[in-house]
Length: 302
Ligand SMILES: O=c1[nH]c(=O)c2[nH]c(=O)[nH]c2[nH]1
Image 1: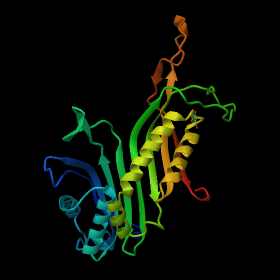
Image 2: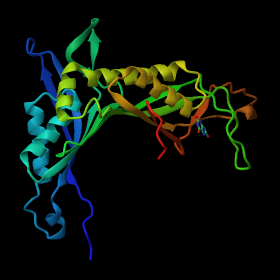
Image 3: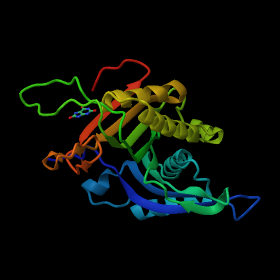
């Protein structure tokens, strides 16, 4: 005997670029390039257990829906579009009990031409993406986060690592000056008491909370990274999260997942060369990987 214990399905990697035109000046644009995943939850059991496809909303229809709705409604900010898609699927199909939406927004920035941001020309000046994850159940239950990923940073001084546990397996030498580099992956969980419904998301999208919080998290991350004489990745990421919690009122917890991308000092003594933190080898692997979640209240560790 076998029993279906869990299932979900939908379309992943649905891509579009939406041009938002200024009503006063139709040549003045904003663009949103997005990658979307929508997974449906609900009573699709017979499609797995009895090869009965009748309840299946085809993944092709899911893809069409994402694209049609992207044309019809305002996709800025991505949090609003995620909430709109969740509402659409739950409202339209009575047997859908929940929707899991993930949206990544790719970076396109306007650039200066003759001292003025050009109306419709953009530069890709970074690989970082803005993301949101929204899981909505028909019962009203909402799990909602946003974040920032693939922001690659490096500092060539102002980072230390010493005072760690030393045992018979330790070869690492303590350092008071090293290179620190990482690909920032930051996630902030929205406060479920302040944002408890899709209606709250639609309202807060209008007030700009999602954009402001993203800009705040980005600038705090970059500022802390630059200004702090880092004792460790652990200490710096905690400080970044604490800084965000101080100012982002709608955020309940902040999580970071940071690879420690090692740069090793190259030994040039065979040529009589002193290497005073000037020439490093960018080690492709392995890397450290350090994660934490910081909240406003103590919580038992997982
Ligand atoms: O900031 C660091 N944290 C660690 O846990 C660690 N471990 C290590 O080898 N180097 C580093 N650096």
